[in-house]
Image (cartoon, rainbow, N blue to C red; front, side, top):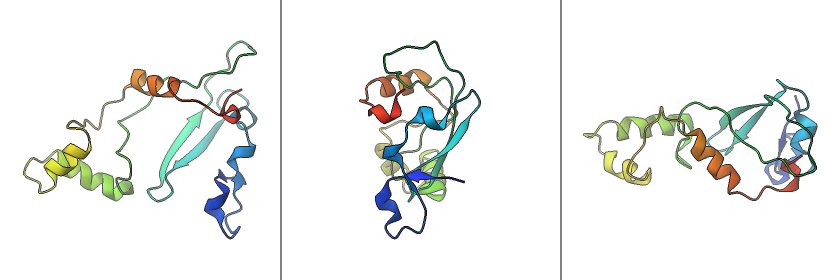
Length: 136
């Protein structure tokens, strides 16, 4: 299996990571149903499956990434991986938990784990400046 990442994460060359800056998504996801695994935040090890659903009509303009579906709300940044997220959820859903107020404040005062806001995700995607490597 080939893996791409930031070269600095493979300081000693033991992981055999390919430099992600030298690859474009359209070279990795070519046909509908092609997929890849994306690991976010190696310390927390969040894994995402990215699937190419369809290819639209050709255009010379860069394609803006968009999300068509998803499940659950994104965990807060640096929550501590799966174990940390479980602790976070236990605390925010239990008003008697000693860390309830602290975690709820950290989450912005509200957090509903089962929500997925596709419009919000796409608003965030459209507000970013995407390097050419990510666009067709």
